[in-house]
Image (cartoon, rainbow, N blue to C red; front, side, top):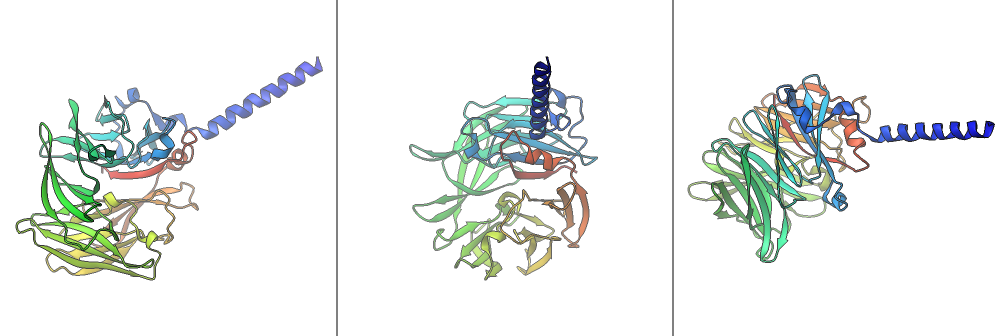
Length: 393
């Protein structure tokens, strides 16, 4: 009898341990949203920021990759929509709605969610966006080599449905205007960059703009999105001189004449070049109030004055780790502010969101994000990384 009691007690302890350990590995149910729960929650109305997390493509070999659209609420808590994985996936913000993507689906979220299943899975994202003049969402993917060259697949549409097409180029950078997408493509045989414009109608059209004037792309890096204003296109490219020396330049292209000028922005000398790489190439620069702003991986914000071409180091982020280690930091420019997702192992809530005024160069607000570290650390035994940050208000 005592033996049976002992065995029963032992089994009970094992069950408790298994349940406890399982809970520790799972994200709290209060943080996870199902598609059905989005309706009636006023989710976007109560959301100040959205963060995109995903596993890498190599973690999806077993088809168990995972991503999350993490909605930071007004009370600084988080709600997360779980999806399939998509390395370098991102978020597009439209009029009273957003696009969240994964490898198999496009989700349009407003006061409800509309899911569009795509026939062809994708594994690496390039850029999502919203073209306000056309009221059109798009998402471009780094799909890979095909029989006759390279394919960057495109999904584009709205809440009524999505079309699929392809851009036959390898894209190293992109940027949006109100009605089109500009892409910087690379030809490895010719060692050249090409600027092109992509428009969307019944089909995707790609028009040549110009060839970027450089001797070779072999030792060059693209560090920012394609930017533009009324008169010019702007690229931020670097040339690596040695293991510790790199020159970062602004390439300016006249829209009418296609004349190109180059201006030195930063000269890194005797530094760890990996540490200078921006937190996110897609969100590392903006044009605001007649200046081009660029944020590097050292937390330094530089400006290029569009009228005078003067270069200045405007300000630096507070308490930046200058090593090459990344901890899911992100940047995002909006309405004259730079928003930065930061990490500190010494804080109770290890992830926090800062906002800096571009004109004043000062920190204007800091909020602790409650629960983001739990989602990042306990994602179904997979390692997730941040790939995008968008600020809604």
